[in-house]
Image (cartoon, rainbow, N blue to C red):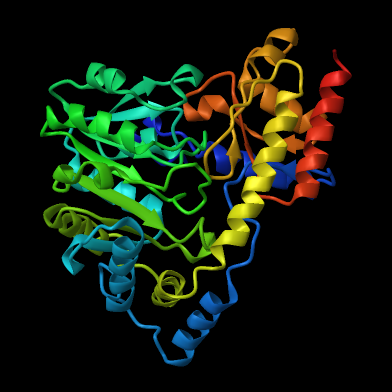
Length: 397
């Protein structure tokens, strides 16, 4: 018997990054030696003082239902983080804790979008944005940026994309997959366009904030455009910076009426995030921050290696990144040179089969011809991956 499913599922794709990771795992189980550069997950252990905080919470019996919007301790830690690191002040009612940053963005869309509302999604984009828009009943307006625009939406592109149905703009900085970061001047230029469209809300996905090595201090939109405070939601979390992906804690800060609506949605879905994980996250945000720098420096070292190594391959062009832990090279020259490979999807499959290296096709991010390679892995694996890719390409040159 085939169960009749909801029509909305016909519009939604499975996560490309998860699909590639699962395929790599299947090949490993079959005895193949596969190096996966697909998943966006730090390869470091969660810092010890964070784990100890979780253990203390268990020993103290902190195992009951938490508050829907987050524990008071984590709420305070998040507010202190924003004030200390971003010079932004939020009230307790303007904060919500979620089961990962992904749920924060999804709750936001469910709370904000009505049927027919459009969301401006700059491409390349994180793979889940367009599908979350569809599940929330909205329509996505994809705005292609490209290498010439440093993979960032410009004021002109934004102005062109806005119409009477536009309700939300997504900004992701540092970006997944490009690693690009908006400067203060670029935020101010976008803010001038946003000033002319008061109905348009903005979500700033800042999950990679601490994995950043740009020349300017890190800025988010509200630092440059404080007048937009009633229209901006900042989403962040502990997964990437503190190597806490499995703890599943994200958070959002923004206008009270919208945050309270996100809490209402959460009350009818997950109810709230794990109490033990929240205790650990409070320790992450309030505790010593010196654990962040060694991880950031390791990512920077890997970035410098892989960008140079990819640019040394014939037919590959890899721009440098400002943060996150992804290389996003164009393989168009390679695809053009391979008669049996039509696009980046087939190239990724070919590299998995012939080089034993798992990558994610750029098509999944709205950027055909590119591949995303995660360098959230050890240097030995990165060097071996580049050597495998080079050998596989040399054999057909």
